[in-house]
Amino acid sequence: MLQLEKVIDFHTFSITARDRETGAFGVAVATARPNVGSLVPWVSPRGAIATQARVNTDLGKVSRSWPRASQSTSP
Image: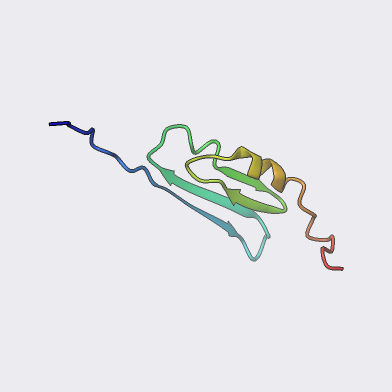
C-alpha cells in the first residue's frame, strides 16, 4: 500500500487599514510560513497592499506607480 505524506495547509491572514484622523496606512500579517512577513506588506503614504503567502512582490512594486491621492484618475 502506498503511504502518502500528511499535507499541512499553510494559511496567511492579513489586513490593511487607514487611520481616519492621520491618514496613515498600515498592514498586519499572520502566517505559518517563514520569512513571509518581510515580503507581504507594502506601505506608502498613498496606500497599503498585502500580497499574501505566495508572495508576488511585483504587485507591491506596481503600487508605487499608482497616482497620488491629489491626482485625479477620472476623465
